[in-house]
Image (cartoon, rainbow, N blue to C red):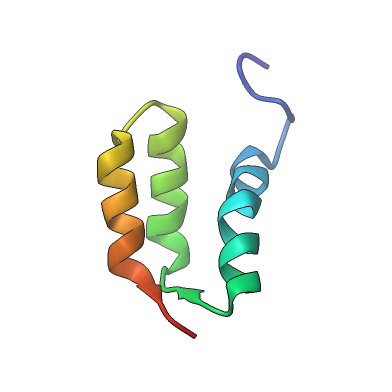
Length: 64
C-alpha cells in the first residue's frame, strides 16, 4: 500500500479538508473533475510547490 492510508479513495479523503471549510464559509471553488483529479495526483507526488497550489486555489475561489 505504500504511503496511502486507504486501499482506495485517498484523493477523495484528501479533498475533504479543502472542500468542507470552503463550503462552510459559503464560498465556491470552481473546478471541474478532470483537473481536480490531476491536481490531487500531482500533490500526492510532491508537485506543485505550496505557493503554486495556493495560487491555483486563489484563482478559482469565488465568494458566495
